[in-house]
Picture 1: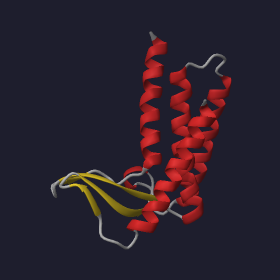
Picture 2: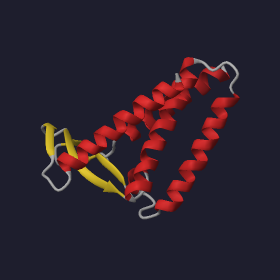
Picture 3: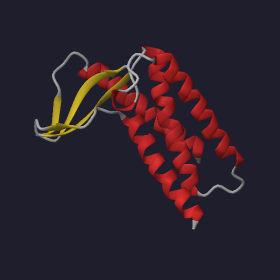
Picture 4: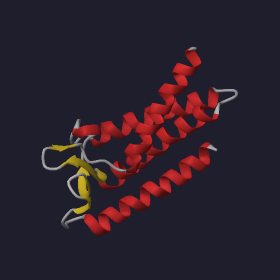
Length: 148
C-alpha cells in the first residue's frame, strides 16, 4: 500500500508542477475563488514558509536523511496499521517530490495560494507540501493512539 501511495502521490505532484510551469510561469495569477484561492507560480529556494533561502544542498541532504530515517522506521514496524502506512507514505511522497524539484531546478515549484482578500496571504505551497502536512497530522494521531 505504501508503494501505491508513493507512486500516485508522486505522479499527482509531478503533473501539477508541470502544469504550473507551463501555464502559470511568467503569467498573471489565476483566481479560482475571488479573494480566497489563487494559482500563482512561485520558485521557492528555501524550505517551508521561505526559511533557509538558497540552501539547496543542505536542504537536500537533510531531506534524504529524514526520508531514510522515516523509511527505516516504516520497515521496522512488524504489523503496521493502515494509519501508520498512510502517514509514512504521504510524508515520504511529499518529501521526495520536493527533493526532486530541488535537485532538478534548484528550487521547489509552489503554486497554490490561499488568502483573505488582500489582507492576509498564507505562504504559497504545492501538492507535496499538502502530502507532508496531512501525513504529519496522521502520524501525530497514530502516535497519540499508540500512547493510550
